Image 1 (cartoon, rainbow, N blue to C red):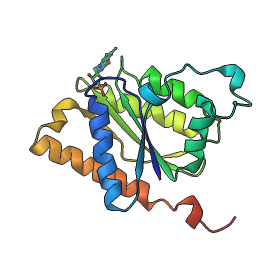
Image 2 (spheres, protein in one colour):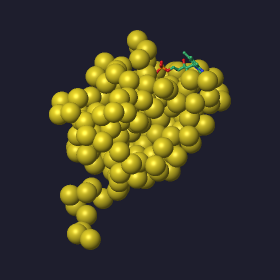
Image 3 (cartoon, rainbow, N blue to C red):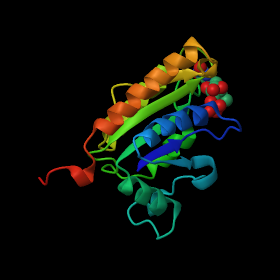
Length: 179
Ligand SMILES: Cc1cc2nc3c(=O)[nH]c(=O)nc-3n(C[C@H](O)[C@H](O)[C@H](O)COP(=O)(O)O)c2cc1C
């Protein structure tokens, strides 16, 4: 299972649209993208007091369980003032430092303008590293304009193809040889 974490609360979110397109690609390889809509499923602020021992069923426990089950993850964020969203950061702060160990992580950012999305992806790379994950080399830095049919959408899809291929090329934990 690939865990897709959506960091936008917007109605008709562009970021969601791009993440769903990534999901279509992994589905073709018979892998499921489990989309977590943070604004709906994990809206509570991080509770530091629960960090070491999250109560069963709590938001922290549920998010950690999903991270532990995934073979890979995709972090998808809108660009807010040159960075990734607080909604996504709040979710990632619920995780422990080994939450993504040994797993590849894809990065998607959607901005309103031509700048910012690449920066948000690069900033997320440092967070992925802190969580023990392997950020895929290809990130998808995009804008709503890329969803226009024709060359923009073709190029976006080509980047999503490359990202999906990188995620799927990584050996799954269950298929790795024992240490
Ligand atoms: C508070 C706020 C700050 C934003 N800052 C930027 C920015 O710095 N650079 C940019 O390109 N777009 C910026 N935008 C535009 C959004 O990134 C853009 O509308 C994006 O498509 C939103 O994705 P979503 O529809 O998935 O929420 C900002 C939007 C908001 C609401």
